[in-house]
Image (cartoon, rainbow, N blue to C red; front, side):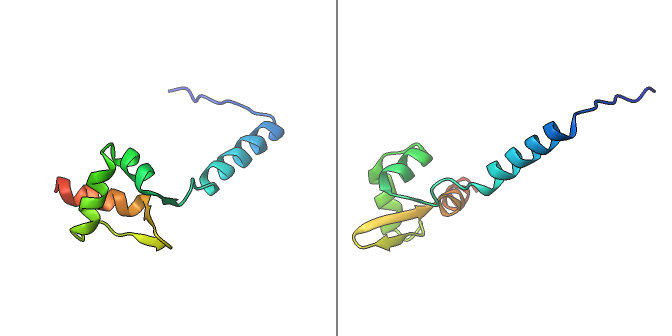
Length: 82
């Protein structure tokens, strides 16, 4: 079996590594408002309010705004599916 080998110039490899590190490091907006949370879950904002009122969706408050983390939305969705 022959071995496949691809040589990259060091500058290209470093550029790729820097870009990947930037992509991993840059987290999109960590908190979503009701509208963005509904869009993330592909539902209506009313459903977000219903899940929150039922205590099935972790949330934070910034004054009167409700905020949600993606990981909490994912967890709520997993609980519904299981």
